[in-house]
Image (cartoon, rainbow, N blue to C red; front, top):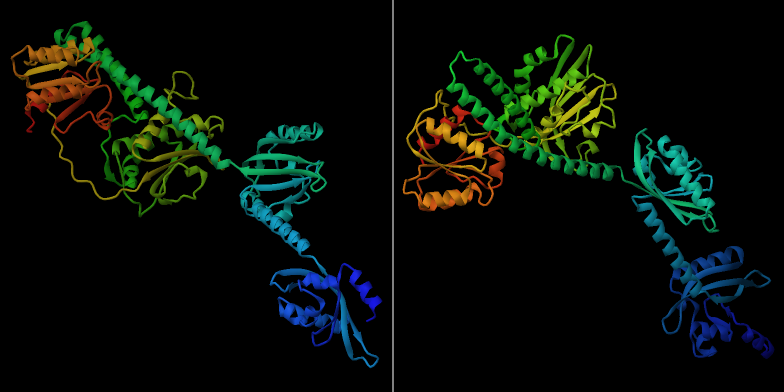
Length: 628
């Protein structure tokens, strides 16, 4: 090579070389020397080409390409510089042959493209990262044109809505929106584009491939002016289950609040009923049997009994009634009341049962479960004014964490399911969420209290179960009740025989009640039965009476909730100085509600208001005669 040619070669900023077929360097310009990190040309010419290749296979690919076409253009591979640093290069080479076709040498140009390759790799990583985010996201990413035509759908579309991306691309996104939401959603979309807003957000129902509707929270980002997108990107999240759960929580909180109110009303009402019932009974005892007022007093007692039944329903709804759960089989309960149901529903309504032969046992109050079935049957009868059918179905089911939204409240585990289905008119979807609310009724005034289904709800929840109502596709309503499967067997109960007649006594009774009417009447009843009664209006007054009275108290009868000092605290202080004292609490709340608040001890007894003369005197005698 002449000096002039070498000078020209060295002036070129790209690495130029000539190598022998065996891999030895024949020529190299200064740019190549610098590119490969050698101190001078001589040092590079002493090296061999294969020694600077990072991957020997790339050298083989390079020679194969040259053998085939004699020219290689833009071949990218890695080389190792003298200091060990690895760089990316782009090579363009030609194979020079002699006249006889034999290979003389290779000559070509190398360009350092390390920065370019690293930038390209970073871009690819970034693209892969964001693609993975989109493709693995539970949200649906949609790109649409300004007219709503779908250009892209992320793979999560299939898991959320059941469609493949191929089925959706090219379709109009608005054709899948619920008709009732379409005007609002399309209006927001148009406004965003016309006014150039950066984005918009809406909740709307979107049609699933199976025909159902899913509620989506959709956020649209306006990238119409962005040349890389040229459309609108919509991020949609399925919130169907979340909204349903939030509604159930709100409904549950509402039911709990109303239940507390109902329980409080029942408590106060029971105090009034106690006074009414006892007064009517005492007046009846004072009158001759042929007195005209006796019949009127009987009507008062009948009315008070009906009012007592109403308060029991309120307590059932508020889950404060007394339950006596036993292990039983639901099939036996249905079989036992089948004839009663036939009489209740009449000949025009056919009863069909589908009872699982291997049904597990449940632990519930048999009487209350009968009440649940009867209430649902009555509700079904009223929904079938003509000929109809009622179906009772039982079976064992296992609830897992992935069950349908209908069972979203139920904890995972084994259950016994009771379904009560009718062929009636069904329930208006707008009314359905409210049917278990107390006093809610669609019946004409005077034909319903609005407590039937509320009572059912309270009994089922107090029994540890769950109840759901749905409209059947074939018409009518289906009530589904889940009871937890019973574990173990109950021990036999030791029933205390009820006494047919109230027995008198001579013991000393301390009566503590903050309601003057109840205190006065209870004292009168007990004194008539022969007891010596000392009364007080509250706890502090009772302690003062006891401290100033040397008479030994045999029995404390006290209301549970009183101002100043509660009954249990009073009993504890009296028992400290009189361990043999018997204690009888009374309350408008039931025993279970009082026990759940830790107000009853192991040696205390309980009577629920309202009570009558007979119930009070029998209970007092029972407590005094019971062995400790």
